[in-house]
Length: 425
Image: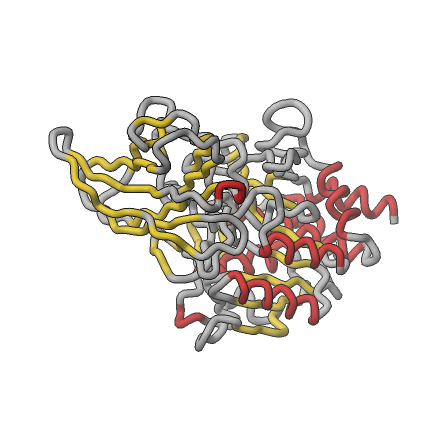
């Protein structure tokens, strides 16, 4: 439900630094994980820049829900156009521009001579308008460091189709897979106890929380059971007493039926109960939270739109310090059987507004967006599909051997990618 992790709502909820806003969901650091020290971008980028591979004559569009600070020193000399599609807002979004500014700065750091076009939005419809505007600006690459929850996982959501249209228009589209691996559960409504869904260990799915933290979760189900009603209820308990805290409410979806719940938590333990019809229906349910971890999870299929689109570069987050994918980074496959994750890239890089490191797949995606800009600078006539193949073919295999739904083709290697491009050119 609206990079890890989906959604298809008329208006969705954005979560930036743990705050719930009435805007589309931007992927956050990840269910409570924060950076400790920034990771170096790597000597390979410095070597590429020294060789004159800087993204000159390439334009990159960045679309983010939080807004941008175009005057920030990391961006000021590269921004050529801005546009706000949020109602009554400017591109600065009233100063709430931390996420977007950080993402754009990573593009600028990776491709320092690329021109930037920045767009901000509030709703899925405004997001689609923002993508259209960037295409009208004839950008070569679009980076969308956002994830829409409550959408179907097969790429059919309107926000995913907008990404696919951009690729069809010869613009390389890069999106994060989302951060839902530890806050995602999917399964069938086939084990029912007193109108309650039974998870692996009972009808209660406990969550891990900190006092004063905002919980947001979505419950969605497949279109074939759209005439049925399912709800998620949140309870507090101290081990003896139990109290209902909040119940999910329906959202008007543009793709699948869904409900959302958002509430600030205090001390104690909490659990979620999912209710539905009295008898098993075999409906496929998906329960996700970009802010908290569930006791019972299913990381598989946690990738979120627009990364679910078939023709985008879907990027997961990789912790290079530990040489492993981030545990929260969303995973494939998509519900229509594709691997889902194309590559992984470093997060925790130092970024504008995030000097201690920008955590999450929404930090990894701009890095790959900048790499795509470097490719376009060296080989301007490469199609989006060709750019994706170059990035994938030069990646270092990590995780399980071969292409897998957690790390895709592997960890991106800018120098190896550009060496391949230069040789071919």
